[in-house]
Amino acid sequence: MGKIKVVQYINQFYAGIGGEEKADYKPEVREEIIGPGMAFKAAFKDEAEIIATIICGDSYFNENLDSAKEKILQMVKKYNPDIFIAGPAFNAGRYGVACGTIAEAVQTEMKIPVLTGMYCENPGADMFRKSVYIVETKNSAAGMRAAVKKMAPLAMKLAKGEEIGSPSEEGYLSRGIRKNYFAADRGSKRAVDMLIKKLKGEEFITEFPMPDFDRVEPNPAVKDISKAKVALVTSGGIVPKGNPDRIESSSASKYGKYDILNYTDLTSETHETAHGGYDPTYANQDADRVLPVDIMREFEKEGKIGELHRYFYSTTGNGTSVANSKAYAAEFSKELKNDGVDAVILTST
Image (tube, rainbow, N blue to C red; front, top):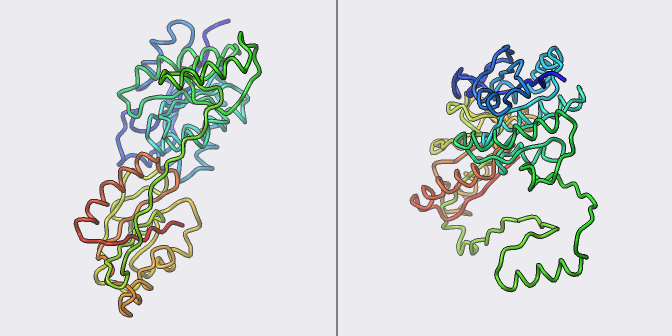
């Protein structure tokens, strides 16, 4: 058997083309090793070679999902690789979604093994961990060396059709697949052993991990809403016409702060949605359907609330990572508190 043939997918940033200003870069294939491919080449040694690198901008892929996916599939089919590697994407949300989407498509269409890598909180991880192998990485490119160290040997195993071990053995995110195996000790003994370790405060590994739910204690009710300053915050992507901050339609890397002091109504001439996860027609016709400035002005006039805060905060929630969402809220909530806001109405789609 000759060298294993690898086709790799990367975004415009790792291809050295540019950052956000080049995120609309159209799919392109180059018969060379680029960016992270150099680290993979070293890790593969003489066992495998990257025969082509496919590049696509994150925004272009996510905003032209069907056409971009089809074009990239045709590029991959031309080279008929033994394995397809996407990324790693680390904690870049749109990149992670793109890597997961194209990896799953290649696996389904071409029936060849695929592999990608992401931080556990990348939205692409939850979307695709059950369908493709995703090696767990750190949250930034600073973890490239560690990511490749885990991805390269797993890629070789996949390409050779070898048996894949457990997530803890191979370093990939759990896929929710349970397999029978013969254990040295019976279940009752293993359970008691774990209980004793837990009681002693020692480390142990459960055989049935439970989901970790993030619970937030609600604030006390507003004592008198008729005197409260109320702010609007939305993950529905409402922005001034033209989307001046270029908030992404999916996997947003930013949020916007916008002045509505002189607005009693949001119209199609002044506001629109940047959100790509729902039909924008009705929101673009009347942005109040997502961000109810009109009714809040009525409440303000009728004395049902004290006043409407002059700024609203907006981002797009679809595909946006939990880590980014928490970071945005932590940042602008300080501003809201400093501005004397008593209550926030959070709207979505």
